[in-house]
Image (cartoon, rainbow, N blue to C red; front, side):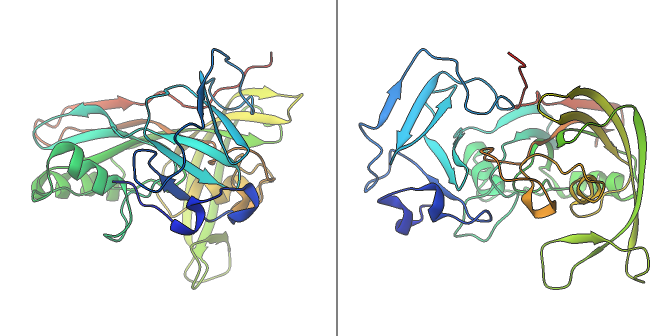
Length: 299
C-alpha cells in the first residue's frame, strides 16, 4: 500500500512541494480523485528529451506527463512533475541466498515502518514479512539501478564483506551538465556536513575520507551542454559520485543539492547500471546489469 500525504491529495501543483519533498499516491485508494483524469494516448512525445519515451498521458490538476505503462498503480509527485512507480520491483538475478533487483528512483532503500520503501515493498512482493531480508549496500532515494538483497544472515555477512574490502565492481551511468570528454580520475577528500544529509570536499578536515572514482565520457551533447558519463567508484562514500561531479562544475542533471540547475526531471539522472560480485555460495564472479531508464534523442 502506497504512503499518502493527505494534504496534497486534493490538488497537486508544482509549487506545492519543495525539492526535497515527494508524495506517493495509488489511484486505487479511496479518497483520491485520479479516476477520470487518466487519458491514454498514442503519442511518444516526452517533455524532457533526457527522459525515456512514454505512451500514456496522465493529467492531474493541470500537470501532465507521459508514461509507458498505463496499468501502473503508483505515481510519484514532486515539484518537477509526476513520475511512474510500478508496483512490482524487477528481480534481475536470484539465488536461494540473495537476489539483485532493479531499484526504482524516488523510493528509499529503507525507511521507518510508516513510510514505503524498497524493503517494505520487497517483503510484500516476495512474501517475506516474517523472514530475513537485508541490504549489503544501498542506493540513494533518487538513484535507480542494481541493488543486492541478502535473504540469509550468511549471505548478508559475505556480501557486506565484499563491499567493505572492495571486491565488488560498480558502474554507474550519469547525465551531467557541461561537456566532458575523455577519461578522468577523480580523487577527493570528503566529509559529511554535521547535522545535514550532505557531504562536501574538504582536504584539511581530519575527518575527511579519501575517495576515488574512475570516469569515462561516453557521449557529449553540445546543443544541450550535457555529457553522458560512465562512473566507476573504487571507494563507496556517501553521495560520492554526486558531490565529486558537482564540485567539478559538472553536477548530475536534476541534482540541485550539489549545484544542478532546476529542470523538469523528477529524479537525478544517475543509474547503477552494473554490479559485479562473488556469488555468496559458490564464489563465482557474477555480473548483474540493469537497463538505463533515461535516454537522449537529439531529434
